[in-house]
Image (cartoon, rainbow, N blue to C red; front, side, top):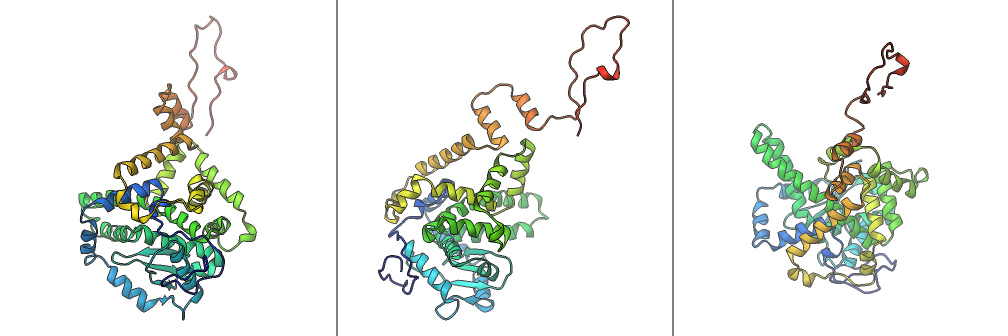
Length: 373
């Protein structure tokens, strides 16, 4: 048990001592971009009512019946060790109602939290077989973090809109409008994944286990062949490597994804674990749920903008460095862009020629050298 005390609906939890966070608000661990979007949505009058009205149009009921009929529901009788982890995660994050969890037969390691009325958690057999107990605890904490933040609502909407976009692909403007919304939702959801990773760390309280889990998701069950420091170096190389062409390719690669790349997630989580914000939460100083109604939308957006600006300033990505230089009023923009793309042509420009001396001519050895592809 986390601290030796009983909690309604959370009995029989594992015995390892972990800190608990009574009344914690999801704002305590949410990424600034995720938090600002959620604060704004929660402030919209009637927002919950509208989305619950949409539940009749969404396949949520069908999904619940599907998992109930064709998956294994976690309980004291089935996957009891996962049930203990689930109750422990809800106990640590003070989520009063434990969401139902299902194990679905799928060799692909995956987990998700979906649902409009009530969140449900689904983990695949591939994930259960891949991770050890502490790694799995971080993943379940990740999904409980989604539930506490209310991400399951928007995740379900994202799934619905993605499906709808496929159905109306033959309508040019209709598809364009829906895909614009889907693209914006995906950008938000990638940030929400960083938030949930932080929740997983608060539950597991073992950074190395979180790192191992992400490495296994990326490279399989071969820990003896992998190294955390080398894995994190990949994230740094990914961010800083290449030129502006690579920066554009990174953007194009990530646009269709709902999750950030695994090395990026590991680097972001390690950075947060070393931050003052994380230490303050572990010391018991964190935003609480009873203060959520007093949260300012303007302040949340300001924090989000500040976070993005800080990322641009500190980024080693060539495109972000160029953006930072432009914002700083740097000169020679055309030359910076040309060098950033590695030059626009394969041939270097010839230097200006002076007046020729009579009786002389340019020989092959005198010609300016050519760049090779």
